[in-house]
Image (cartoon, rainbow, N blue to C red; front, side, top):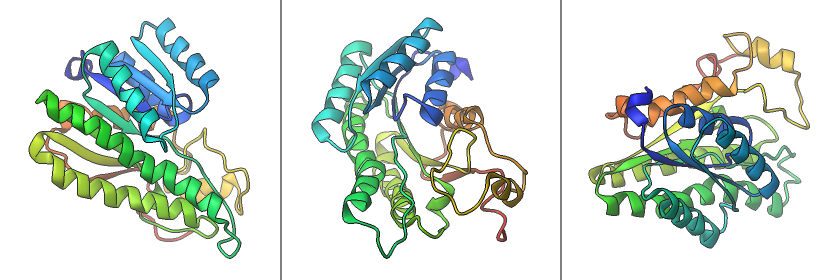
Length: 252
């Protein structure tokens, strides 16, 4: 796989921790130059420094994906540093668990704007570069099991993640003729992701998952890197579930 991606350039939003940081590490191992961005500069700097210490060619940038000018600066800085852009991973996100009767609009907007509007803004800015290059590229949107299912008290998150799938399919159809593959990866419950307020236990999640456990960030990252590689060259618009069987099982 390293030969497939060596010399490519990627942006990973929400790349300072969790799944995003794991994807960035896998890219570095595959010979990809990587720009990571997230809102907190301290986390971005620390993660980028760690990746560079491991031999990676990494650029760390603080940015809020909800702000078009900040996203454009990330894209411009990436192309300015590495000379091109081949891959975008839209991973930036935030959670909200709240009774839908009392869900406030500020929380609703924050979740939708981060997951959905942010993905659109970053995709637009990146696709323009990929199309102008004439070599195409890959845009990988990170969805969720809640892209295809619902759960109480997660109206904003579920709506946003369903929207990511709609966005993925629309962009995939529109940009494929330009050589830009758009697709989505939908993880299940991952070990580093802990809900602050839950109505079930980690044991419940393990029992609900056919594989019997949480996934790991590295398991998700391995799938992500494959989907961004030439080995997945005929995959346009799919939603790949990396969930240990969660969505295959209809019970609890």
